[in-house]
Length: 266
Image 1 (cartoon, rainbow, N blue to C red):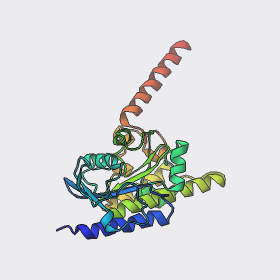
Image 2: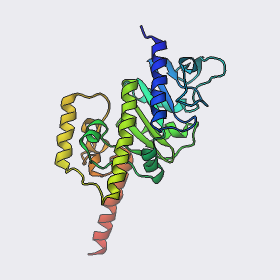
Image 3: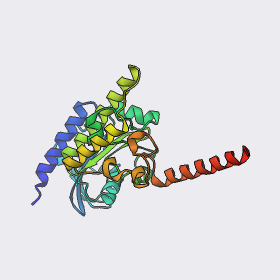
Image 4: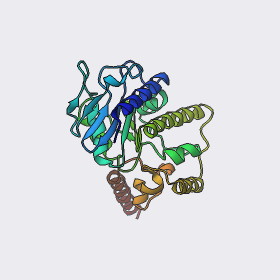
């Protein structure tokens, strides 16, 4: 039997962690945990994640409607985003949204995290794609992340922040930590002349290590968008952070352009 009070305590603990690490400011960020197919616990709106106690936590159904909330509290306005993750990823049991400094800077700059620069990032995260901008509290953000949900466990939200999800709350939080650490190292290495990336062979070797570990979640090692279409994987920066459809469109345009140029040069 699920002990809801203990889960609420864990949500508060994770909230304190992301607040203490500077991943959120003021009332930013939100966290949710799946209890069953129709019951979810989530953080309330308008509350600092560093000061929550269990009675702050709300319970909602799969549509985001309130099942239980104490007076003065209501679910995060971003609950729609969380529900979309659970809808598209039955393996996910927890979602964390935050605004970590370096990862959010990359999101603001419009740069996904795709460069293979350290074993832990390649094994644990793979690539972190960039979802297009959507207005907070609307269906635009859920719609913007949907195409990435079957293939990734961490997504940057353009001009907004980061979203991570996994089979447990602690693992979802760890993915947020890993995303931020990856972004920080990538940023700093660029100041030192640019990162030295792994070769495709080294990346594939790390992917094989991940397979042997049997880690949960989605990853380019076995579900990469590009790889499924017979192309190189994410870490070779060949467009795997885009949807399969958009990649196919790009290949079609390139093919037509090549044929046109060949015809003009005859």
